[in-house]
Image (tube, rainbow, N blue to C red; front, top):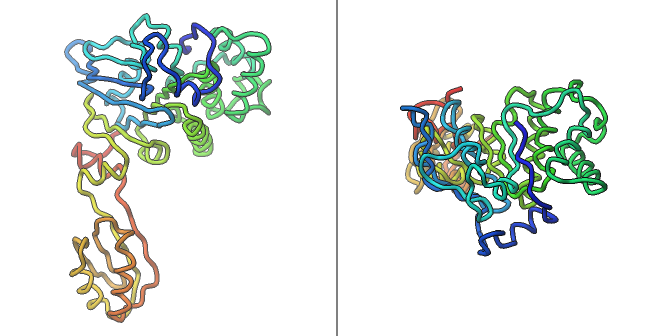
Length: 340
């Protein structure tokens, strides 16, 4: 599937556009994307069930959930490729509907399937898509060069795509969605099936786009990608958005605690007793030469904990603070581990 072509010339940059009023309505907008109470049914199955979220300029928002959770259906609704049974979507203050080309022109969509022509070079692919976006001449050539540099494929620009690795094809696929300088970039599991090195390169490219002011909607079922890339995360399961927020907000919501692991020797019993009396320490366990604490805001407790060790006659050799991750949050909210 190719991205929807633009219907007009693009402004100079995503950051500049984020400061402009929404064209058509005339009113300024704070969020690039506003999705409100989205519902979509396929027969008797509810694929998306009353989902609402928003994304600000420069923000990366992750939809985290297992395969079949409703992520792909949600982003197809956002891009106007499906119509919701209920709810509404606005991009840059413009309502997204099946025929809303002005709203779609502000979206760059990267589907799960690579949408490139394998018998063309990278440069030829980008030039083709650029012409769909009504770019031409020197402006098109300059933009193709910019995108090739952005996705780190300048040195392979004139090689055919069928000679590319899977990761290189994914990066070029992202590049094709950026030619028209969209305000919202939507990526549907863009790292599926690629090697770790290519995954790292893709995530670094996406991180750079967010820092330039582009709003990013990123779907994944990889916890580490959501934690690394996303400013906020929405956890979606069985079509419902069960929670959203920053990682720390989600952890605080479900009451998860940090684990402080100390490798120590000496008077561990006295040290453990001192820790049990501290504010913010929920539990203390001693096993051989290890003391494990369950604490709120573990890193803030460290100075007091280490002072207590010294006073109790315990010698601490190493300290590790293990903060709860999104896997723990997902397990708490859904009752299951993240399913593949």
